[in-house]
View 1 (cartoon, rainbow, N blue to C red):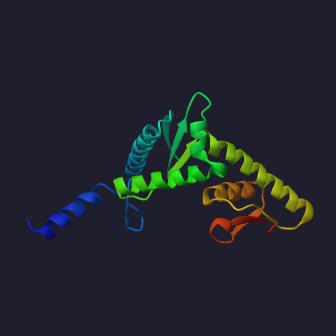
View 2: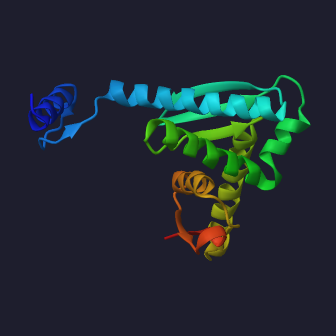
View 3: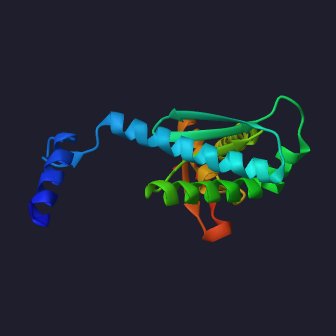
Amino acid sequence: MSAESTEHALSEEIIDDQDVSENGEASLPKASSASRLEEEGDVAADYLEELLDIADIDGDIDIEVRNGRTYISIVTEEESDALDSLVGEDGEVLEALQELTRLSVLSATENRSRLVLDINGYRQERTGHLQKVAEDAAASVKESGQPVALEPMSAYERKIVHDAVADLGMVSESEGEGAGRHIVVSAE
């Protein structure tokens, strides 16, 4: 069999295993997407487990796939300053570890990852704080009628605030560049 006919046979086999959308384009089936996310979680967990071993830090790794994303949590049953050091001030170390973990997944799977890493419930606590910030900003806009600029935050945190502001019936836009990118909340 020639290289060209082998390639054609392989492409037909791949198309047979894919769903075809209404416009005739091939798309990955949901099961494939779920298994890709599970593989992503396994690769990330292996990477983080090795990192914890090297740093001699105790922690359990939980993997969850929801809303088209892989969520990895590192937790411990007892208070751990070592895990807190992996969060860092304002989550800076956590953000860096998340990016390194995403790079590890990319290297192993050749797929970009949107996984979310949480350590000791930091992101969960931060989400509660960000929802309160959104509520306070919305209340201020309703009271004064003036737009409110929030502190700079990561893309993930801005997404949480945008969603919370929208749920409150207000409008939000991201402004600025790089580390100074922030949200402005307004009535319109």
